[in-house]
Image (cartoon, rainbow, N blue to C red; front, side, top):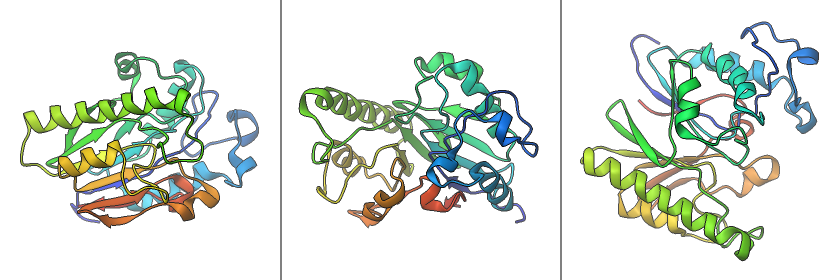
Length: 247
């Protein structure tokens, strides 16, 4: 692989280690709280580890937009974060809908291993690219959207993406922008959303998202649309192998 430096992505790792675990010494019966075999993910942590090591060096960066851990408490999520830190590369993480342990950006940043960053309504710079992130939310055109429950959260999340983009561009103009969302910014029922309009406004080059699994993967909108490259990066959509999005 030489001296290549690249940006990769993968989301929805859904780890659930209940104690500190060595990357190569996992006992499924005793080390895991929520086995993903229930969803057909046979030893998915081994598959992630093996494919990760084949592709990624310590010079690379991996973007992980949400659903990293099933943990309910931060101290338990730390087991998953520490397992992840044993893999090569710099990791940039942002929240998903299952980040129940996450309540404060400062608190989670204080416990992160040294090779990780946490983004939420803000940005970082990787290889000259602006990485902007927020969680996102169910879109108003989605059949599961409930106006009285979801509208305020949706509007708030659109505002958080606006904040991330505004701040990033104000401080570092003329850099390409990659957006990390957990939820898809458009779906088969709608070619637009508040998230999508913001990304067009700020001339975002690439948007990665997760959240979709199983049969929903086939409904994902991907490819270049209005100049924005869209890519679903949930674990099972990628066959548990991080994908390179930029070099």
